[in-house]
Length: 256
Image (cartoon, rainbow, N blue to C red; front, side):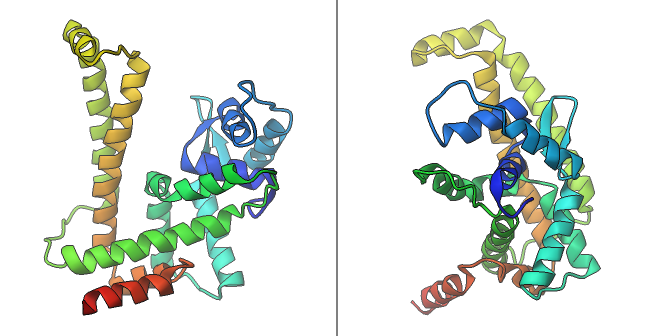
């Protein structure tokens, strides 16, 4: 269900950014045509299958959210069966932390979306599990080099990842509410007149929410990888299909 077909594509889109069924259908159809009203005759049954199988969960906001625990188990089974990689209990915990913050993957997956859009005929052959596994490897490879070069002498916090995650989620919530209140002030209209374009409150909040979530993900990913041994990070880095070429490039750069 997550290896090919419409269910795999819908799961991957929901994994990157939780949305309503209508919006997911709209995003998927935008890749195929310029029609504004999406055809949901196929997407709704596919989403229902994913929900019934426990891969997606529809929240009170009507949006479909992926289930991290279910995804992690799928990844572990895939790695053992197809890559002969066994994940122990500590590594599974690391995966659970990593997968609980899908914003890590949002910025790393744009080229996947472009590949889906760029095909003249939709074949629905995206393997979401293989793609996410590859992205885990890419993120780990990058963070390993950053950790080696720039964070080796940085003092580590004693706070647990859960505490940091909770505090940052609260930070995003508070900052968003603060900015929403500020956007309603009369002075904002004066600023918009100077810029030459007025925007809705929703448009303003999308940008602020993205900024705060990006800041949150940057701090979280540093906190997470600072607590993980380099040997574990390197093990996951090998999941990236381009890792060997990346290593050659890094070693060549170090020689210069």
